[in-house]
Length: 84
Image 1 (tube, helix red, strand yellow):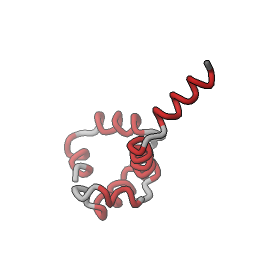
Image 2 (cartoon, rainbow, N blue to C red):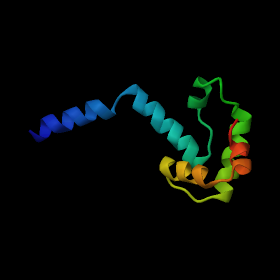
Image 3 (tube, rainbow, N blue to C red):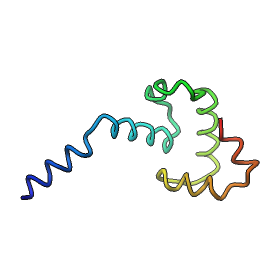
Image 4 (cartoon, helix red, strand yellow):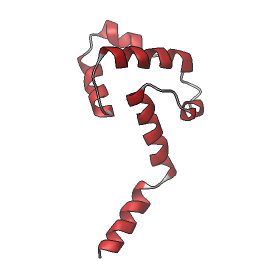
């Protein structure tokens, strides 16, 4: 039963989409650009790099949920600096 559960969990969380999300989360949390960003032409890589540096140097966070909470508490003028 444990082997079946382990196999099902592995299959569930070892999909290509999950790997992409992990890479995107890593970019957000670390502030270091990754090739996964190239898959999203709507993102301005130069602006994103600057925004992530600004976010990382100004706020403390350790996961995507923390970043969402930060964005919710920001005044619109500050949040607008991070929207492009």
